[in-house]
Image (cartoon, rainbow, N blue to C red; front, side):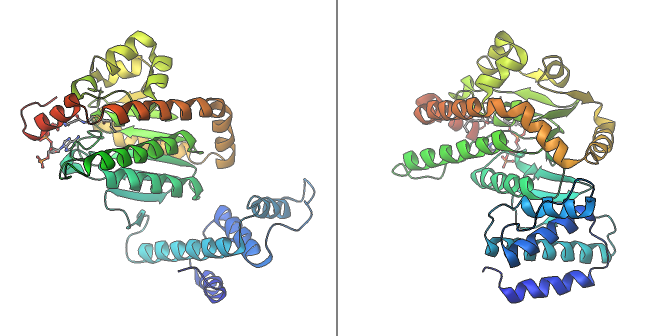
Length: 359
Ligand SMILES: CCC/C=C/C(=O)SCCNC(=O)CCNC(=O)[C@H](O)C(C)(C)COP(=O)([O-])OP(=O)([O-])OC[C@H]1O[C@@H](n2cnc3c(N)ncnc32)[C@H](O)[C@@H]1OP(=O)([O-])[O-]
């Protein structure tokens, strides 16, 4: 249901009761959304360069462009409601606790200290990416691209970062439906990869353990990759009757050179974290015992840098590649459309299911 004018007024009153100061960045966002919701696009003349407060307000409002009044109203109400629920949860004896958005089934998404953390949360399946998780990651990335955080982190819960595509995604499907299901699933995978290509803020992988398949290939689209020394990097596509995806057919040869990329992507050579670091896929490796502490200390410091500056620098570094990456994504995906139901691919899944062939 869309927020009404009354909801907006209630939200304004709720804000007055908020005990904790939400900080300047959030206050500017609220100001801008309120102005947009009540007056429409920014109509005030640009203040002079030294009129800092009015300039910040003008910029916040002007950034909303032609956002419709109704959307701004809804965003204002949602933002106030998330601020109130986080202040409620912290006043319930959990000071500093993460703000958790409970709508995800396969992820735990929290936002704190300028960092949105998207944690894959199917530890009993080694964080295999099922169709639900693909969809939820798309949603979480879209939300993170618009929230107040400075950086976004993807990590895994449990001993694995991720075992890659869930090999049971197409099982339990009747023979008549399998073609259609495979086609739609791959369209979803293409959209999923596209979200990584377009993600506007610094995106950091905290690779807490082994990574397989699409969880590895996507790393070429991250801005930083930190790995525990327990992590391994494995893309067993040929054995599965599959082919490189996640833009790795383009990013891996660029990162590590064509022959190293071939050894991984075609021959399925599994890399240790140190090897992946030496080949440029991983930024830095940490001992597992101090991994979480060291990485999060560093990320919290990075997240204090000015978010708009980081965003623009990322654009400068990445934008000229975007068009190419999208075309690679489309091409890789269409190759998979042709092979995902091949005899080799189906047999590999059957082997996995019958536990006869562990990789
Ligand atoms: C988009 C198309 C392109 C493809 C891209 C790719 O990513 S290709 C790459 C695709 N990925 C692969 O080929 C990796 C396939 N997986 C493996 O080779 C091994 O499971 C392992 C080496 C990851 C872990 O071995 P381990 O002996 O330490 O542990 P364990 O084996 O006992 O597993 C524990 C539980 O997790 C379950 N589960 C795990 N992974 C998956 C999965 N991907 N799917 C579904 N389920 C999975 C497993 O069934 C078991 O569940 P159960 O029976 O308890 O209900």
